[in-house]
Image 1 (tube, rainbow, N blue to C red):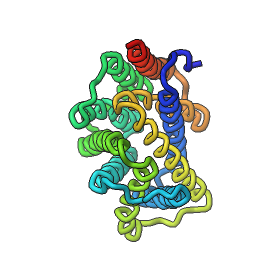
Image 2 (image 1 turned 90 degrees about the vertical axis):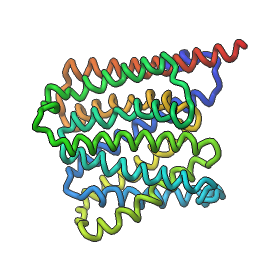
Image 3 (image 1 turned 45 degrees about the vertical axis):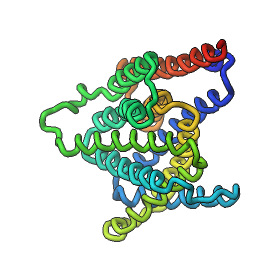
Length: 303
């Protein structure tokens, strides 16, 4: 249904769009798994187990394809791993300290930060239509999260937790810009590999000090976290390799729609006009982003 918008552009653009949608779906399912655990396990334990599963899968795929797991730009790969790990800690900590609506709004400010960072560090331009998509997506996210209705702007809200959530969004954007730069030379699996390679040893000491033995049911959700994370990381790395960072991030707004659907179907959260209006805005932002790239391809092809 979306394919006609692409016109006669190259197949890699379709591949990028599909990869980013699958990534958004996978990350939304990962969020379901985290929510099902219910916060009984410490953040470091969730990240560590997720990292071990992702590391095992990535090393297997690297060996199978005969790819050097260490890459060439080790410094930037290390920075990407540190930024991603820091972002995870901040986002999970914010979810434990803030209303979900507030944490969600701040977390999904990262596409804006990604566009700004890509312009500064990668010299990528932000086309007018992509900027409109970013703004429209932000409006949709705010409507879905309903921060005012949930009193998330109450003056009694812990400033430290709000700051942690904002830092998480900034680190996410920085990590994605690193992925975009690394994708010019590094194999996608190498980029994915460094995330758990860095996060696992960072979390291990905390796990040994604060770890809680998971129940049988929690192990299922932990496995889901690891598997869906792996799928999401591989797909978003592929998408960022094929599209400018700002464009890719605007498409990633679709994760909000998936999250809203799971909220209704799995957690019996009410479906209201804010949710529907926000979903329309997010979907519109995605269509604008896709059509903007299609128009650009048509212009290039006519020259």
